[in-house]
Amino acid sequence: MLLAALLLGMAATSGARAEPARAAGAPAAATPLPPERPDELKPAAPSPEVPLPPERPAELKPSVPEPAPAAEAPTLPPAPPPLPPARPAELSGDAALALKVAAPDDGACRVRLKRLGGAFEPLPRLESGQCGAASPLRLTALEGIALPQSATLVCGAAEALARWATEVQAVAEAELGSPLKAIAIGTSYECRGQNHDPDAKLSEHAYANGIDVMSFTIEGRAPITVGPLPNGTAEARFLAGVRTRACGFFRTVLGPGSDAAHANHLHLDERERSAGHRLCQ
Ligand SMILES: [Zn+2]
Image (cartoon, rainbow, N blue to C red):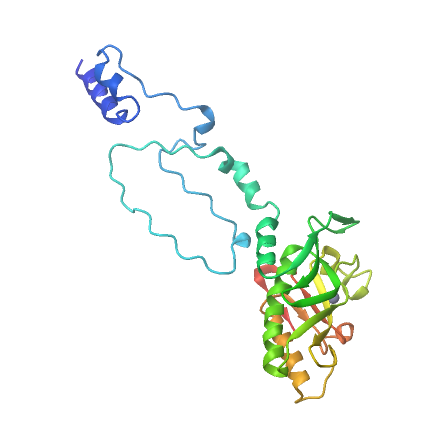
């Protein structure tokens, strides 16, 4: 009887939020048992501790360091023992893993691209042997900057181009005193190996993840073509400036001087390398 009273007291305390009226008026004989948890809500491990969210794999962490999470209450009161919170089904086990390795969130990228002034249209999936892209788009213009040839790119590469173009605009104003009006694009998507070598590893162009920039149109001037320019000229400083800045937006930047294949254009791509390594030449 003492035990029953104790149980009833605990039930009245812990179940007070759920059914206060019935707990108070129920006869002693009907000692309520805690409700069975549905199977799908039971944690795989029997530990009653609050489960921590799974660690994100290192390669999926953003390069920008996240602010340290607010210190979670280090010492929880010892009683009453809390039930583990029901994990939402969509964040459990394999589903959680699948979410983390799913395709990049193109929706958010496209919103950002639009905010950056990008004009584009979605394209159907590209598939050609080992080449292709799941959700490419055709980029036709940037903020105040024409792209006469347009570019077929995945959103991440298009966004990098848009962000870089705002810097190109600033360099044009600083070095040339005139606004950038257009960027001439050579290759964007093309199913081929690196440097047109069929035996080489596939180029990022084969994944709509790379772009070749051939020349820049500045208001009131002859187009500035990528290539060797006399040292000390404003045009040379402009080209050097935009090339240097490209390294802040693209993982790969190649151009005149890198090798013969890149003597007349800037090759920019978003190839992922281990440990976030970049190739900026
Ligand atoms: Zn290229």
